[in-house]
Length: 511
Ligand code: ATP
Image (cartoon, rainbow, N blue to C red):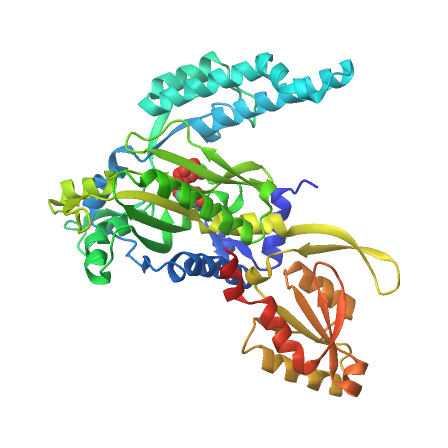
């Protein structure tokens, strides 16, 4: 079933996961708020990242650098000069696009068309599907897509905006909204938000909201090195907000103007970066898989055109409802960042390696994940509508959010079967006990069937019901969100049963 993003956004709002920012005032583009369930989900993802990266690695430490940094930081990092996206407006629809995405998406549509036509042709001719690859490569749309991509990459690498304007014109790339091929010239646009530091307007200094968390790590590198007494290879990890004035903030929380990153910079001796790059690629993919994202929903996409300082770069992509897109980048960045900060600050950013008896600027492998994109990935991966049996023996449609148990915003819900005092008393007592250990909810309104459905949609893995039998023998039923199976357990064993299901240590051991 293909899931419509609009539907997912409505669901996320209705359930209290994600709200449009400032909705009371008609909203504000590309800004979102996390509601009561969303904030829990986001925190859980962040916590499991932190535990896997910082807690489990003897040689990785945490950092929480400020959002506002000295303006020179962004000169050193290259953001003042180069953090630009090329944008273009369509004269008919008045819609604004990032040229690279516009052309890439057009190329993708061409390629999909080639695939479809070839499939149809092979089926008609009774030819085996193995011939498809060869046939697709000969298809004119496929070849055109490849040539568009090559021209795009070349112009992007050179930041040659007139070449992009010419490409749109010559190739008659249509506006997805109006179909019109009339475009304004391509212009560049700096993605950093700026503000002013200081109270007196005339003396205030222009500064930027950080567009990535990584630079805080580089700038604090010498302090961390000294205070944490680390030996290369070691890493510094950070979770924090980043801001980008994206030209087109689209696709719900996929592309936001205020978002959160989880980044780790791993400093290694020059010459060993290749092996560490492979190590982190594999580790990070495993982390995503162990949080329940099925392998076929994840893939690596290597960057074909590397930044001049990069040795290698790959994206971990997830199959969103709108196609495979980046959720995390893994980059081998040489000594570029530390060297630039050394140059701009005039200070040495070196490491004295006792084993080698010399100083050098370490190389960096970076893992950079978008927390909000992971929230979106888990919501879309877990969302399901399916037929489920009713108590009366019929069937009904249920919406269920199959989140990994460790990510569930509510881990367990406790219900008295009916709203009678002795049922309620027992259920309240169990709730009061469990909430010290788990994210627990209590609910007595509506029929039990409706309550089950309600918590299915919130992604609650277990629901416990206090029924008539509980009053006789102190046992309860525990219903599993995914299998719908119910087991009966003595009330005294419930805590241990749940503790095993939500055992973070056990999960960490599997990584
Ligand atoms: P894109 O190509 O999608 O613009 P990027 O390559 O610029 O992304 P990076 O600079 O590598 O992204 O940032 C690292 C991670 O931060 C990305 O993998 C993504 O998960 C997240 N991220 C980047 N931009 C945004 C955004 N506007 N909204 C939400 N998450 C973002």
